[in-house]
Image 1 (cartoon, helix red, strand yellow):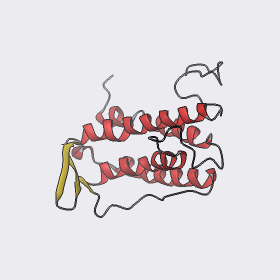
Image 2 (cartoon, one colour):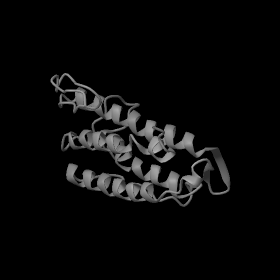
Image 3 (cartoon, one colour):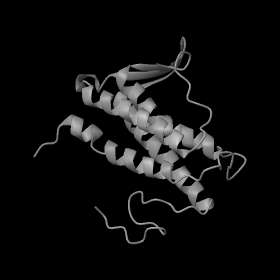
Image 4 (cartoon, helix red, strand yellow):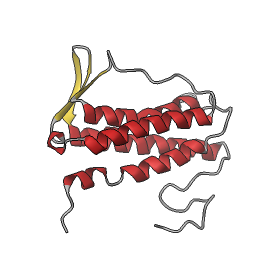
Length: 171
């Protein structure tokens, strides 16, 4: 049975979003300023980056460019985990709406990152979606999982069992 392009492109999205929400929900309260190394992002900065990455994915699908000169800025902080999760849920809801209505005829178009008149880079939208949206989310979610381990917080199951959930059964 042939798989259509929409399914191929978006079939993993819901699972990755659900797993990401589990990782965000596991973050400890009151540790926003913690960072494992001076070169690392603080827990708060990294968590906000992960929570707002669905917005980057949405922007990749809704326009043929992202202009940093006029793009909305993410919040600089969150007061507690429920507020962080509400932000993530809002971003995910908006992304789901865009995915549901995305015209696959636009899939192969070029996508440009710019800062006003300065073009930073132009890449095919499939590359941007895969590398800068999905893989980017997975990468930073992995960093958050490491932060959890270093803070001695149980790490949620991401793909298979973990030391904190050794009985996980593969779906």
